[in-house]
Length: 445
Image 1: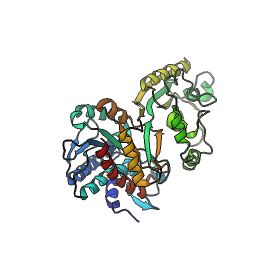
Image 2: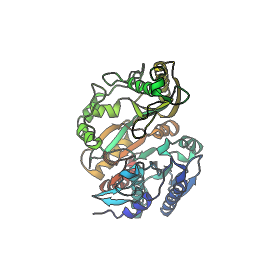
Image 3: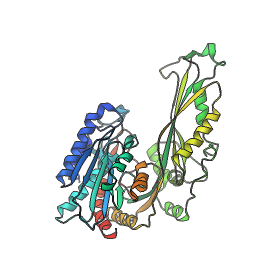
Image 4: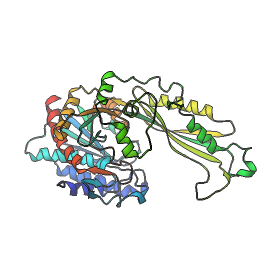
């Protein structure tokens, strides 16, 4: 049966709130205004706060002294839709198909943040006061690394004081399996520009006498891993915290990662660092990945050119207790040493974020587990997740609070990909989960 809330979700999804492209600025502003009106309709105090980038929407319930305060974090910005030709329908014209809502932002993160809002509306409809004080912090720059959110938190630190943060921007391990994520990998990014001759050259006249920057780029990427897919950068693993016995035992009970990952990815086979399961490789081991490599002629047919430049984009996913800037220092030193003197390398550092780890035995975490069980039934999975939400660590460092990461997306929801989708069952489950979570946190904090 279709959800009674789909019209509201569809309205939210129609905003083309792509944060990385300036042509969408009017859509970003309109989406923030829609959230403002929605929060005001709930009886919340709400403001749209400008930043040097996209605005932050901050909403607060009427404060009651003596009650714990919970902050709900989410984002209203979405990824670009490219390649648009691979979408089954226009990305910002949501449709319901086979029990799932298809649209850009459906599962990252509009479906989830709206579920939290509708859960609050359901609590208010009971005619009672909320069991907690609520703050909603909905930003517009998560998909571009939240460049202005830390400064916003510092500027508004006093009014953002809370007892715990709740975020639903992580995943479920399988349909119907409530999932609490207690750890996230950190991230560190690099770009390398390799410059050889001052312009592209005829590969017959100059090939063999001038070093090809594209070849150097390929050799650099290949040098990142040994034959066992371990990262070769000296010191890369020095600060990695070993897995604990209870973690490996808990993960052994999870659905088979190999089957899920093969089905979703379409890869011919899985692989990675030798000696670790697929669960461990994604949840608790660091990586070095080439996200993009290019140089020279990319058009149809042959052009016998020796390119003057090549570019590499790298990211490192990090685990406790790796520190992003230290890893970038090690990576830059290693990569610079691999570049031959006939090619100049220009390295720029990108965004970075610390890894995060929560103790799942904390009272708030146990409240989250009870709420997930109430919403989805069965045993709740407790996992680490391979992705990164850098602001979670900032919440801990600046506000001194832990974050509950409550998964609602499935591995095949296509976040960042064409035909992104969100199961209606998870949307409705998220509403139920929020209702129970607020009551549980009101009792235990």
